[in-house]
Length: 235
Image: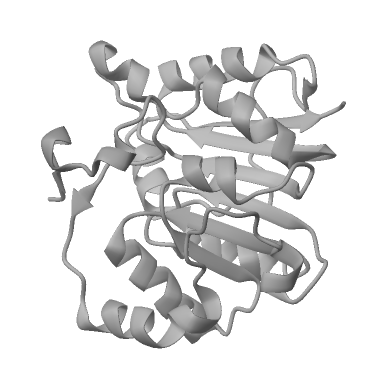
């Protein structure tokens, strides 16, 4: 079981009103560490306090999608395989997950993913120019299901306000959760922006590019729901 590190040990720079992650301890396998050591120079991007040229870093002018919180990277790699003409900037802070996605990139010969290990909020604020993204994916963020912890949820109006300028007009934001009350909050938050338009009446059918995770499949067998939301920026 991963252990949540108490706030007292979180670096001062990360004690912020919005944070895209919970710092966790986890076991890094030898294969994951080797992947970081060997693959990071080509597929990793270090945090910097200046705007990143995504086309230069990917070596292409293909559409760019930001994925926040990729976990172990299995779904991210599958999406990248299904959408080979799209580039994915995948951000997470969990070391074993970073190692694992780099390992999968090597095994699957994936060329359209770049990985960052940093707080996505700071990346959005400091490294992404406006109107640079064609899509944003946030799949199964921590639901913080206890009411007193709801304020820690990532998908809230202040963070979406930071995200939307980075999204091109015509670009989309795709959220998914297996926590119904969080889905309702997500729907309310996104519906509150007049420059976003829902692509469905409320929740969207799961797009073909998003694979079903093992966790999701297990939840469905237990009768749990999954909710996808896909909104487009219209102005």
